[in-house]
Amino acid sequence: MANASRAWLRPVVALLAGLVFFLPIYLVLVNVFKDGSTIVSNPVGLPVPPTMDNIHSVLSRPDHLFWYGLINSTEVTVISIIVTTAISAMLGHYLARATGALAKIAMVALLCGLMVPPAVILTPITDVLRGLGLMSTVPGLILAYVGYYMPFGVFVFAGFAKTIPREVEEAAAIDGASAFRAFWQVVFPLMRPASASVLIFLGVWIWNDFLNPLIILGPASGTTVTVGIYRAIGEHQADYGSVFALMFLATLPILVFYLAFQKQFVKGLTGGATKG
Image (cartoon, rainbow, N blue to C red):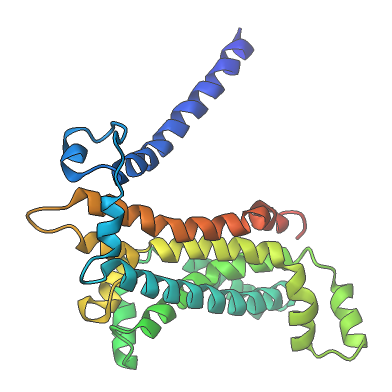
């Protein structure tokens, strides 16, 4: 009897959990194609008849809120994930190969950085950026992302690097390759699954981040897609059609990015669990 009850309980729980996660997606998809009055009166109903006015109004706003946010978000996300991936891959590989006490201490210190919430260190970050003259600038926001998310990248790459045989690097050294060249031409291509996992995680986190761009960039230095959604909501009124359209359009780039790398995603997460 116990096994029979578990047999139907798991599908029911999975279905309920799936519905909970699907409900926000459903609300966005159906309300994008409704006018504002219909959204308020019937937010869960199907768009009959559908309209493209919300998307058109967002793309043709006089202040170009979406386009400026898209440019800033793309610039910040792309540069941040490339720089973070490159640095964390080299550092993770070094810490995975090193055997001294200093390397172990460095790994523990980096892992401790994963436990600190971003909001807790936001004030010190702004003080540092202001001292460097990078406050309210895109490079300052990128530097903050690189510093905060590097421990995660190091953790993933260090675990995956332990699965790569040392003989591969030794063979490259025998052929006359330097350590730097051996890493980028031999080791790093073998770490492609880990790179995909780091790129996806960091891309989603940075693209969807709201607090850091709002505080670090400020109102005078542009906006990102997430901050743009916030600014589309007025104090006394809100065009819900435009808000849902902004959410829909802001999701498309990162969704395409995820689909492009999703084949390597799970492989990269589990790669470091097979050795060391």
